[in-house]
View 1 (cartoon, rainbow, N blue to C red):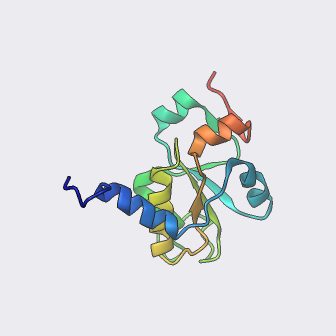
View 2 (tube, rainbow, N blue to C red):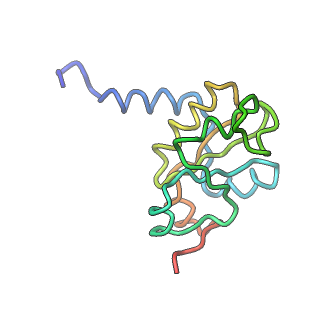
View 3 (cartoon, rainbow, N blue to C red):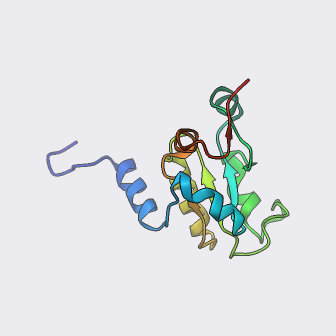
Length: 133
């Protein structure tokens, strides 16, 4: 990294992604769900088993997220009814989810966003989570 290069490329990409989102705090998630948002947990199965489940979340693996949420895709989920669906993406700490939400925005799903701090923030706030058995 040169002296003029202050951040890594991935940090710059993350910042650009987040600049396009209106991210939610853990405390804002329940109200968003009451208003019709769909919470999507993109954490891998092993991570969900280790960290805990999110009771209100629809599980969609990250590698198929765009296909499942795109209302024009043959592989879309029943919830993917249009561009106005508010998809709230959740990962473990809120990094991968920002990139994933920005990818949905790129698809035209302009209300897509993520949770600041991810699953860990939900757990810390005691919101919507169930600890592993």
